[in-house]
Image (cartoon, rainbow, N blue to C red):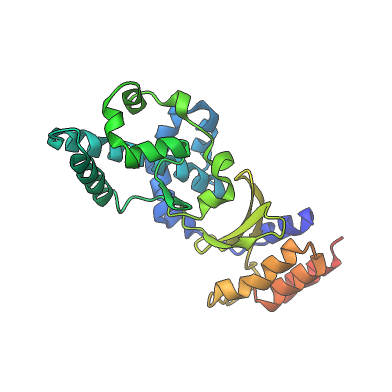
Length: 258
């Protein structure tokens, strides 16, 4: 069905909303931070690829979160009068109050604020922050390249279902190897695999639609996703049309395509 997705993208309705979005400008303003990480430096040049901008922002938010949390720990450490349980609880509580508005990913009962660190290291930042004031954890503040992990491999497509992005989770394939997400600014459905990479994107609304209908999008997308995961080409095309995502003209082209 690869040609089908290419045609959907090539005939897409022109849109510039993503490049006007807060997400996009956040990327442009912070992408210089990617220079520290050779394996992800390629994401620097993602300005024309909406999915890679979102991927990059997961790392960029993590870098920002890490710095903010460390600054709070350093600031509050001056109030640690003694290493007892009461001081420890107050220390943790105060830090959590101060970072409550930072983006994060819910990993079961745990919150992941630094997606390129392991669950264990994230736990230290939130539950044992005093350790960052002592050796060897204090080294993480200046040089953490050896502790950097791939957030997409490690947390799979679940990392996108977080406040690191503005993607809307739609559901998973029966095999759980893929998940579908929707983004309102791009009007694209992103199919992300278990390695956190993009398998496919489904561009909604073609240039032949004079008056696109943007109401109740998530309900209208459901049959499209069901057909995609069922690997039913015919049902997929028909659901796109019935849901108002393609025009009569493009429907005709897709039906003829082999």
